[in-house]
Amino acid sequence: MNTQIRSLFRLMPGCFAALVFSALSATADGITPERIPLWTGPAPVGDGSFVEANAFVTVHLPAEPNGTAMVICPGGGYGGLVKEPEGHGIARWLNQHGIAGVVLEYRLPNGKPFVPLL
Image 1 (cartoon, helix red, strand yellow):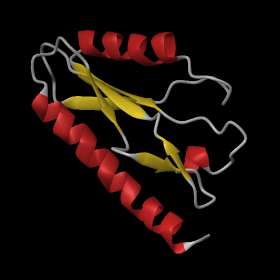
Image 2 (image 1 turned 90 degrees about the vertical axis):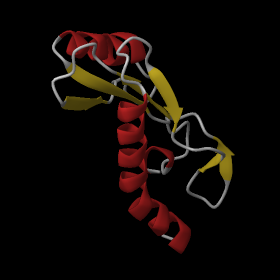
Image 3 (image 1 turned 120 degrees about the vertical axis):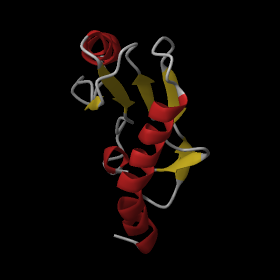
Image 4 (image 1 turned 135 degrees about the vertical axis):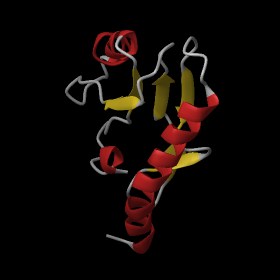
């Protein structure tokens, strides 16, 4: 594995956490979910090339937060993402219980095996 990919693996958890905590503090109204791209430019493919990013986190804040949050990774079997019922629907249900729901819309491999890891 090349040095750039290793560096990305080391940086990703911290960047993801910073995005989530930033969004949690920025949208305290509990009404409109905020959608945040995980890359501001092209995203790595894993073979040294880059493509336009299509990964996001959407932060659903409750009207009456209880101080907890949950990251939701919707299913779909790597063929697609079931974002509404297994993502945003769960986030709205969590909001009813005072829990912030953070929906991760991750990238699918589409024949490129390293994409989900990056």
